[in-house]
Image (cartoon, rainbow, N blue to C red):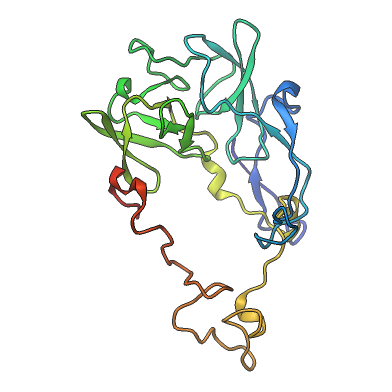
Length: 277
């Protein structure tokens, strides 16, 4: 998938850069692997807004993705590459010899007709799309969809263009460098998929107009500076005034704009060798 640019025949098209759908082979999703998503509009079960700036948007169907890769030692043939509105990378439709179909995240450079497999065996081939334990993946190999708990399914490195790399193996753990720069210990029995996630051009996208954000379910959010003092700590003042506060805060007075919100004593600290940048 590449980036599609437009001639500036309208003001919005001047800056619009969206993904080209040339690499996609199928428009309609597999009916047995979808169900409708119910929108919340950013509201909880009591009807109160808990996430601002959410609402509207196009109706979506959720595609059931096989992050667990539980179909073991059975080669799945890639029969389609599809768009998924619920995530940044495209997805692949696999068809197994018994007729079962499953969706997986599309790795970079995967082709229609390729076969991928999932296994715990050490003789599994190291090729793009295959899923196997970190124990049997060589150092320096690009991986994605990494498990943090054995058998739970991939939880990290799943967005478009993302990849991690195994730096070292020691005792029961592998040192994995994540896209954020963090180096983390992951158990060798946890599995990962070989290769980089497809759609590395995702970061080049420019929506071009406010309407395209509304299609995604994102509503306008007013700046704190533009509010009244009753609505935000940065609000008020005569004319165009600054925030006044030497430490920028959120609407509820919590530090923001770069403030680290991670707990100081989190359970996973012992697995982190080097923190993210």
